[in-house]
Every structure is written in C-alpha cells, then in structure tokens.
Image (cartoon, rainbow, N blue to C red; front, side, top):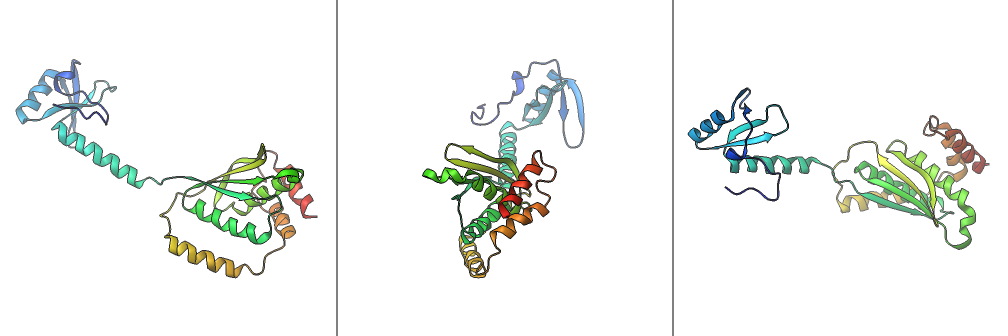
Length: 231
C-alpha cells in the first residue's frame, strides 16, 4: 500500500503498534486491543487507520485507506475554497495630495477592505518634501479616520526612510470580488459625483468628533494634531 507523500502521513494496519486503540464509527466509539481492531479490518476487507495518534488511547477508523485519503483531500479542498484570500493593497500619497485624488484613493481603500484585504497606505516624501513630514502624518490619520467603518488600524503612521506607512486591516470578513467591469462603472460614477468636495480643513476637524482615536494610546495627541492642522 502506497502512502500519499504530498499529504499528512497516517499509520496504517501493522504500523500501529500501541496496545489498544479507540475505534470511532457512525456516532459511537469503543476501546479495544489493537490486534482485535486489525482482525475486524481484515474481515471487512479494509484498513485500520490511525487518525489521532496523540489521543489516549490513539483514535483509529476502520476504513479503506484510499477512500480515507480521498475524503481528507476533499475536505481540505472545501475548506480552502471557503477561505478568503487576503492580500495587502497599497495606496500611495504625496504630502500635499489634493482632495480629488484623496477621495479617489479613499474609495479604492474602501473597496479593498470590503473585499477582505489589508491596506498599506503611505506618503512618499521626495527631496525637500520631507519637511512636510507632519503634514503627511495628518493626512494618514485623516485617512484612517475616514475608513473607521471599514477597517481598523494595525500600525499608526511611522516613518521608514522617505516613506511614512499606515497599516489597516478589514473589520468584516471578505466578500466575493466585484467584476472589473462593475468596479470601473462604479469608479466613473463616483468621479462624476465628486465635483463638490468638502474642504480639507473641515474634514480634518471632523476627525476630532469621531471616536477612532478616543480610546487609543496617544489618541489625545493625535486629535490635537488634527485640530492644529485644521486651523
């Protein structure tokens, strides 16, 4: 009998050398000597398969080994299909990003989080723009605040070289991805509606009224920065 080298390895028949085992079946189980369990398997023309070696006594099933491996593969495939593939999506800003570009990227970030993906937003400081480091931090804090409904902050803004990063993870489980055609249509509709944009100062001030940073360590300092930059 050949073992499946790609999957988990199970002890089968004479490979099971403990004194007794627990045999599980349809809704019941019983402990018996391993020799007796082997005899039962032979009588039925199947195998004795150890499925839980660390139990006391080890748990076994009397089943055709090939059928057992097929069931295990099928179950693993079904579980994998149910899992949402999580990716890390990047959103890039400049330290002086205008409102139209900001809202366009904010919409993308909402879509990413709704699909169950993480978002890594960052501000890239080119040349002397590093002087606007605090402005970049405020922008990322505003970004996190505007996405409070969709994601939670994993890491507050931190400067790494010429980039300041903010990490967000989704609040809800991912959903099936929209078709590219639908996403493009919704994107065009959103752009058409963005002819009137709320002034940046008002949006920064609104962060102070939101509870995102209220209970966070250093939250008061963050809110003060948002208020200061809105003046």
